Length: 185
Image 1 (cartoon, rainbow, N blue to C red):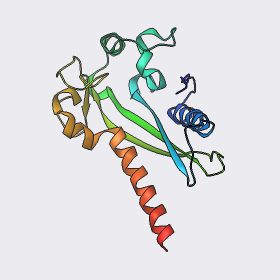
Image 2 (cartoon, rainbow, N blue to C red):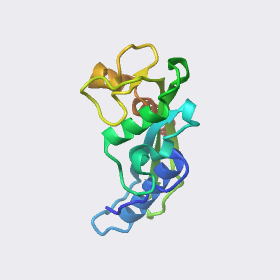
Image 3 (cartoon, rainbow, N blue to C red):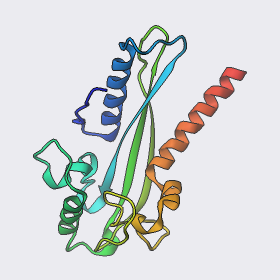
């Protein structure tokens, strides 16, 4: 599989780039023979903090070392986020996890259609200190709206129901359901 440089300015741009490049690679692969459409999913996601004008945003994974095109350690990203929000009161520490999924279709003639995009967001706030052992990334700092515990404390089952990815995947599922319903008509 090709490595894709995530250099777009938006989650949608990065997800689209990854889906199209992977679809292009698959469509030219001698290992893939198809008589019907194939689908490729790719996503991009991250944390947007309102007090930081949406940062870290598309740079969430490499926030602590933006000059490098490689991911930073979670602890370093979290430390930088807390440092930047040090003087920001709780009521202004709002933000969201955002996800965009791109669905690229490769038709039987190996043509790639423009990807469909499905987005999801989980609103919440950033705590003053990390809590919890579960999850990854910014999970120990992020408390979703309606909860008092961080994603790292809530557990995988709860997170998977509330998360930005779960919401984007629900839209994708609805899309396929409507496509199936149209095909049956």
